[in-house]
Image: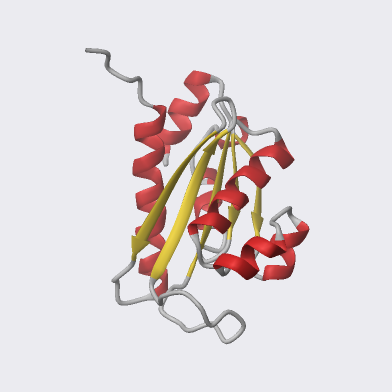
Length: 160
């Protein structure tokens, strides 16, 4: 996440995360970088539906689409951005190598995440299937993918 933190600092931007299946892994990766305190506003691990709702996710969205959906990932990203006034919010939900008896819907090993750009009111939403041998490796796969997408988002656009 060094390049992500570096680019956020250069641009004077901030980020906040609301993570479920990654368990705070994105925030951890960011805070492993010197200077992270300049860019990371807040991180919430909302593992249960109850705390997703407390943090601003509409329970009807969970009921209609399931907690494992791009719709919930988008709401998570926007809610955490608005809660913290961060320039970017990242919301992550999905199943990693284990069925969830409390939420039987959704495919195993499928993760949805969304990056919300508050300034432009724009969502960048992704669907990722994880295929590593361990839960920890699957988390790393998601974190690496988010890092790649954030770098692209923060890189200047080349005009033709």
